[in-house]
Amino acid sequence: MEKICEKSASAVENQWPGVPQMWKLETNLDDCTGEALGYTMEKLLEAGAADVWYQPIYMKKNRPAVMLCVLCRLEQKECLERIIFENTTTIGIRYQPVWRDTLQRRLEQRPTRYGSVQAKVCELEGRLRIYPEHEEIRRVCEAAGLGYEQVRQEVTADLNENSDNRPEQRTEPRLENRKEK
Image 1 (cartoon, one colour):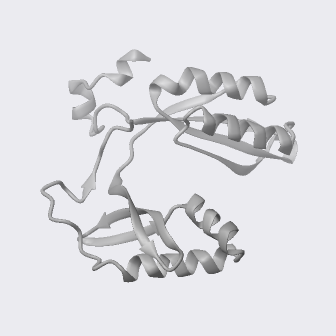
Image 2: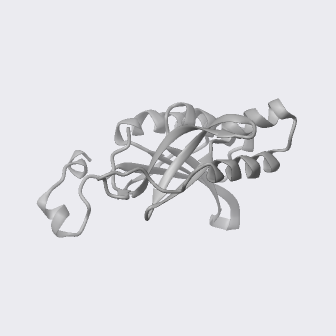
Image 3: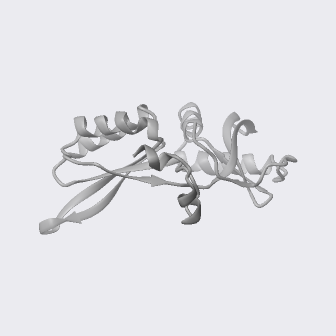
């Protein structure tokens, strides 16, 4: 598998964009409890997986099941596979290279009616998208004794109202294809 991680002339000729940034691990599970699945997701995220999700599927004999999917860097693959094998009923894991494009983004402290919150600031075609971080919404809810949706809407409105919605002057491209840390 090491050859896949090297940029080669044949990869460029075949329209592949070079070295994959991420890997997708997946396995189908039809005999694993919901508790085990939840625990496995927690362990995978704690170990540094970029993303973890489940998809409902049907397997042979029309059995309902889930497909566990994990997005990770190549150097994490072995560790995350071990977590999946140790905590689920799977006997095999598929993997494939994944390329992705991401918006430029950064975290900033921004003022809101509830005080300063950490927000994700993304740029798309010269316009900013500003989103509050989930943990910040949760923190405000607990402190103010308010519901999640009310706080999310108000904080999002405050973040975008307090912004001129114009990006800082930069020379970088708006859409970047970058390696994950």
